[in-house]
Structure formats: structure tokens, C-alpha cells
Length: 176
Image (cartoon, rainbow, N blue to C red; front, side):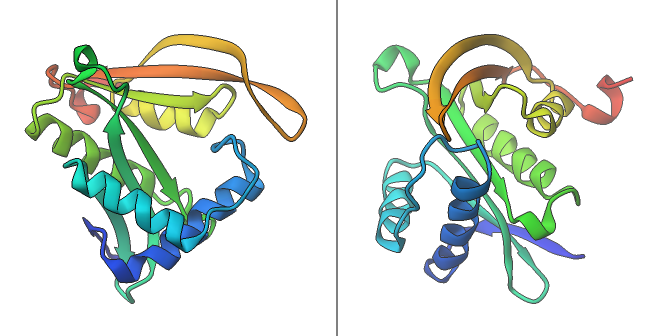
């Protein structure tokens, strides 16, 4: 499958909404239970772009949006200005094909070029696929916050992983 990673466009928003709402309904990746509306996703994208943050989509050769990724501020205070937190979501039908890796690589490259220092991943503890993806890029475990969220009547732990963007990491060379 030939994919292109590009900036989000207005016509991509229904697919971004579908991918997001699937994750809400079927995973613990988002700790909410109410699906987003198209208007909410439009506002999220416009807010990210207005703040100078990227929203990328992975698009197949036939124009289908297969995944998306973005990053934004980690915390609002100026002391955190060089730290960002990101999200990567891949359509369920396209998982396991390297799309998450492509999207994350694009985010990391963009964040480095933008001069950010640290990228944070907030991952539901136990999401081994996401943990493995992040380890491929050199993310390190940086702590677990136990039982800080709930979904489906269960308490969930939040794993933080971090990547220092100023360190050069080459997955092909640095992973044994």
C-alpha cells in the first residue's frame, strides 16, 4: 500500500472523526465514553493549527484517510513551552502495517525542526502495541500514575514515556 503523510484538510475531518470515535468506543486509548461530533473535531483541528501545531493524516493511494497524528502543548505554563504531548491513531482496518510508525516519525521530525525539547506520550498502561511503537523511536518510561482515570467501570493507570528530541536516535542502528 502506498501512503502519503500530509497536513490535514477539511475533507479529511469525517474520517478523523470516525477513527477517533472508534477508539473511544472500542479501546482504552481515550478515557472518555461520549463520541465526538464533527463540530468538536473541526474545533480541535482549528485550535491546533491556530496554535502552530501540526495535524497530519496518512492517506492511501485511493484517498482514504487511514490514520492521523498531532501534537500540542504538554502544559499551559511557560516553563513547559518546549515540551509537547502527542497522539497517533490508526484506523482499525489499517493497524499493524507500519502506519503508526510513519505518523510518529513525521511528528518527531516536525517537532525537532520546530525546536521542541521533549515529546511526551501518555499511554494507557498495558497498551503494549503503543509502548512497543514508542520504544522503537527511543522513548523511555518516565513514570506511571496509578488509577488516575476511569473507563468502563475500571480504574486505569497512565504510563508516561518521553523522548528528548535533541538527541539523535536512529531506530535501524540503535535497536539491537
